[in-house]
Length: 110
Length: 114
Image 1 (cartoon, helix red, strand yellow):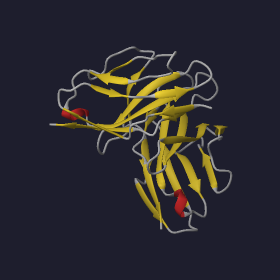
Image 2 (cartoon, rainbow over the protein chains, first blue to last red):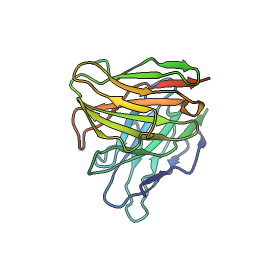
Image 3 (cartoon, each protein chain N blue to C red):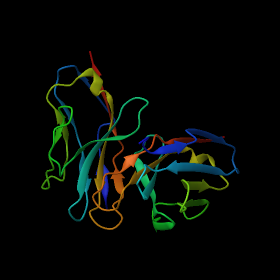
Image 4 (cartoon, one colour):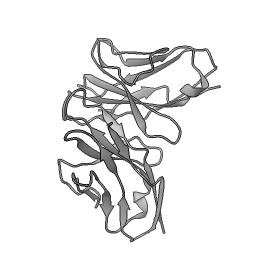
């Protein structure tokens, strides 16, 4: 079954501390993995996709096929990083629909 | 480019009424996806449409729900005879094509069924 698991509903860290948002997936094939972010009162927007291998706003995520994980990391959290983060998987064939995790709310404390 | 537009942003219906949710994709986008987010859950795929065609409706409930994307005008998600369990946020996303194109999301419509 295709599934994305984000085990933490809420993650609180202090400003300047490292952040790791966990994401594990289940998919028979080679999926494309994404992280989406939703800031307060804003729409869902793309943060990272694994194929681009970019660092956006200091965030990085590495696809680990052996562990079927795509954890999101940032070495030093900022208050403006506080938001809901969704990990998503997209099939690389068929209709390319997304499968989302349940999301993790990140709170960065001053 | 104003981005993906959805209206209304909030919709209140009584049980048994009909709900119509509209999605205007970004200019130049001909592919529309609808997702539903129930409280405390992630977004779940409902239906994928291209102009005048339903491509994948595997996530749509079999009854009461329908979707269309006419040649002219917005995509419509229609829920007939709403029940309390239909209360959710409904998100639309559009992309210029299929495949590896990014999907851009609208702000969502929050449906409340009384």
